Length: 322
Length: 252
Image (cartoon, rainbow over all chains, first blue to last red; front, side, top):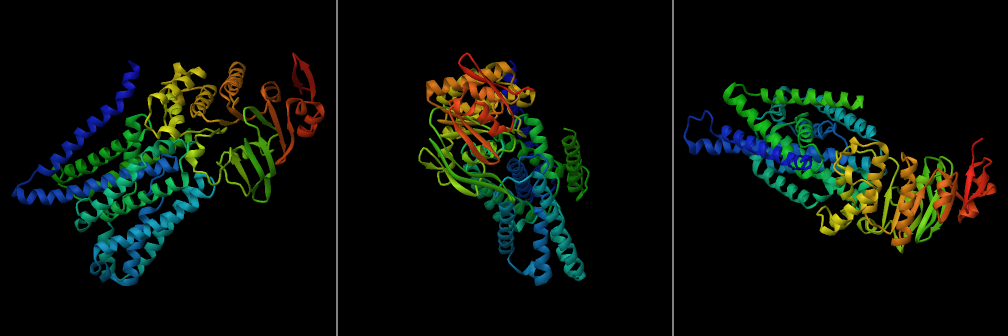
């Protein structure tokens, strides 16, 4: 009997979450619409697609990042991934002027940012993970230092900008779920699909990687290659979500921790969908609640960050106590 | 046969393994003994490709470990280290199932399930198989990891201090299990051991290390005698023959 409960627990969780996610999606699409459906459906549909993409990217990237680094506290954004994105945006405005952001084709710009982020993460992680086993503390410190460095550099450049240029930049940098940049939706969707395909093909290594480097190597995983591919995919997903809504720090941590808690074991076939569904429920459900029920607007990112921050502090304290 | 030649490993200026060349015969139990910091674990990690070497080469049955794909080696040679801290939340059964990963890449066949059940049974873990690892004692956890490595069903099994955390009964059971697997299935075990009496009683071959070098190697008789032990451990150790086996007394 006990055995049966253990086996079905992740399944029950998944079914409940699917239902909740569908409810939030339906509510998001239908609640409070007073216009013509042929306008409402595509209009909200675009927004919905954006939210789904962001939820998916953040959830998957955070869970896999934690798998590869073998810890439950770090997330790509704590490690300064999205700070890099901000730096790239700021540099464009700083060196080429604010017109550049509006002039160059957003697809081209997004492509450039992707290449930069992949390149950077590849160098950083190649050095960090792959020479020999390095301590987690070193990894955290280097990541945080880089994050601070990127942020301060961006801040510095932003201060030197003239107010108009700054205004343009600021618009692109604020995390906002209401004003999703819909020009990039198509590209973002395609990229997320490719990333999913790549990850799907190597899905069997995820569980082995949770055992840690020594066990993974012992079991025949090509550790170097696998980890680099996963980390590059993670940085692509971070780029996708940051490009759509701007940097969000603690959201990934929130859904990844909740997913681990709900599922109760560490199997990725349960953890990954659970985290993604949780992210969808938080974003789509939360956005519906704020837009339709409370008629607020930008507050959702603040609430989510607040909750995520709390989870982070709890994790750090619990980790220290253990 | 595992042939290691000219292996060197430096941490900064210090050579932890200094020009070690050994060949470990196929079949039976080989124990590596020596004082703390002799480089035993490092050598084991290098042989099992967990740790890169600064010079030298390791060949396992004609496969050079630095050029052979990792998943091919994973079906030939397995390693269990001392420190098995785990962030993942897994049951004993889940952990042991990972031993089949080199063969089935996560999709367990009926044959895999047989292997898993047999390994659990060998180490008396069947009743604990649905407990989570963090709910086990140190010794039970150690047995679960050994079960995983056995489940990997490789010709060569490298174990770094496999008797850690085990009580006398389980320590003896573990050694007997290896002896049986070596005799009946032709497996080769390479162990790092600290208890020289366990090494003396169960090994077919002993390698002694000190300061990153192999100082002695040979049969039990060659190593377990006061002269050789003095050279290895730098202390006087009495050796007595009891029931045809050599037992060392080092209590003063």
